[in-house]
Image (cartoon, rainbow, N blue to C red; front, side):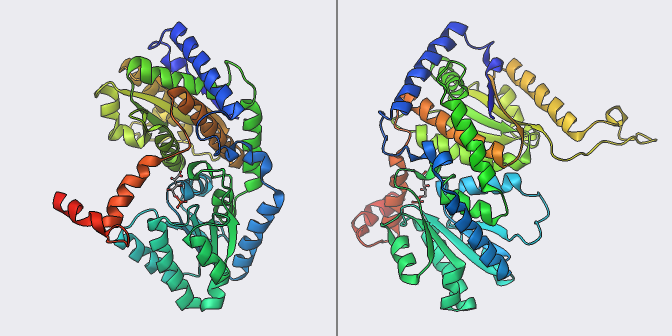
Length: 442
Ligand code: PA5
């Protein structure tokens, strides 16, 4: 279960102000629970941990086993934004950092950029491997994944033949609309549906996250169990509700103290993509109507040697939220050395993770002294259940926080602006008229 500690903010805020924001967060909580706020037709994520049928996991495991029987050792997951970040977060958090599990395909990602070199190098890898593909796009019309899919599809068809290709490609998209749906139906691909009432960045517990996570060899049932337990905890309306506490404090720091940037900190490199997933969730949900905390992320201690200077002494517009995994899975102990030339014998017999925790505590105190309020979010260990709990916690808290801020957490109108320009510059049919005016500005 996720724990929240706002104690590292106490020297920055008055308790009365915090209590006032807790009341505001409770009012926002009511709006989320009553499903009466803006965007309330996108609240399907709230019950996903208990709604996902076991048969869906069985189906995903069926694909995993069928591809294993063909010795598939590379799965290209194609998607952008909410259509890949949750899966990548879970897979990177749970995987061995250096060694691939035997019998499990390597998962690589495409469609989240338009870099020609990236795609060319990915195809170099595919050429040496036994490849399958999962293409994910709720709208089924997003340019980046569509371009990547055209290239990967062509490669798979050329390499294995069209009929075999249809067994090596799975599409996850809308039930009825979009180019990807049309294409998948025509080609006879196995498809999974992204529910209408679940937006991309809230979709990790739908097939969008479930299939890639199952293909990577992880226990999706445990992840849903963790999310369901976290949901139960968050259903209790109280001033101690962790989502209420987190939403209250971050909005107080933003509106009351002018802290406009929240840095999500982790001291575990496996959680780098939790930061990426969280930035998308909070950035797209809250950054609108001229408002919103700017979400940033760092991995420590690595980034203490790059961003640490700014956080300690740069412009005082930051607060930090540190996600801590309390227990390491593995043991690495610093040994004694007779010569002690590196002068590390004072650490002999200590766990490396103990050093990491002391670095974390030292950083927290230094940053408080430097004027950076601190919140802590912790889970006991890094496993499927904890990740499910973290996903659900952050989604729920995001809904509460955005309603407190006064914005619709479930739309992203600003994402369209770059697309229109890109389409005009690429002379997409229907956009040609704008292209000359845009070119004149460049
Ligand atoms: O959260 C969102 O809705 C977005 O980030 C989408 O996930 C992203 O734009 C990809 O959209 P689609 O799945 O329609 O290709």
